[in-house]
Image (tube, rainbow, N blue to C red; front, side):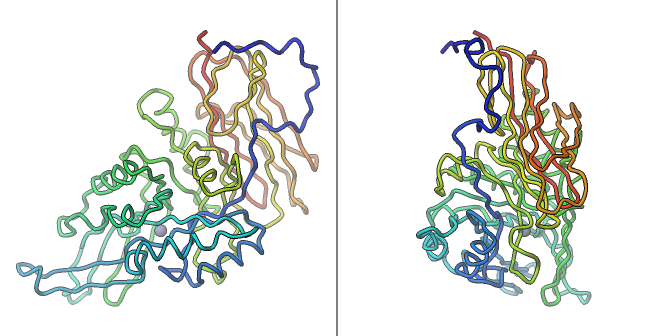
Length: 412
Ligand SMILES: [Zn+2]
């Protein structure tokens, strides 16, 4: 359909708070464990915490399966040692889904059932060794959202690979991603920049950070970010931009989105709302939230404390058609562009708020926002090919990363 050119008839001064699109911003905490796996609270108690923190929803991600075993060669089936810890499959996938979905009532925050999976581990040292056993890779995790029938969770290929042959690299993960995506699941790498060391009885559990798996696997929807200090992969021109450029250059089929994750196990660790996702939804329902996450319509918000700036709008407008796009959108444009940011400084700002606009991996504009409520508008040329814009907001109290907005020239 050919777009009409409305630019002549609109007043030059557009209302400054007009939202780009019919979206409502819902703040969700994603990646939360309950007592069903490694958390300390029941689903009800998590909901109470979420409500008190003013969150709009919780994406529960209890561990799908926490099971290791070692069979002594050549009688692997007979002489073995195994560890089984509480998990979704141990409780029963149907019971788990019911326990979470029954939290949706009245004006409670939304409760969305998802899982965190550890598709693979391998033995580096036998638990029969006198130094004790060692497993590797068990903390290379994937979050799987949107599989809402028990049989879909049961069928996911967890522990489906031989743990005695060393590191199988991306292979087990790629097959897990493919299986989850084929069933309509949304798959995000969890905490890829953290390394993990744990101990279970006489078995050590060690996992290096795994940003390389973001490059060597495909078909997943994105990766989650959390905590200040682990964010260099989403700085301008870093790993995330390489992945996005691979998409705009046609080397990846899907864009790679970021998701703010909390990886929360209870209030003994930190408040529930320190790392969240602000999701732009068409309605206040679990289905609308999942659709928005699938389409990348969200911003990751990582807080150091509660007084950080907030983002109300990040949009790109085609001045010729007056159409606007938000994070996750792909827009065909006819004219020059205007990129707009609307936000608010926190209640007790402790320093300046810095805005960085990244285009195709490079910094296009940097500005300080000084007013309490700020609007920044930057111009850019009509694109010649596919390009993307993303925004970073930094203040001493935290940082916000938006997902990219893609633009390409309109071919009428
Ligand atoms: Zn994890």
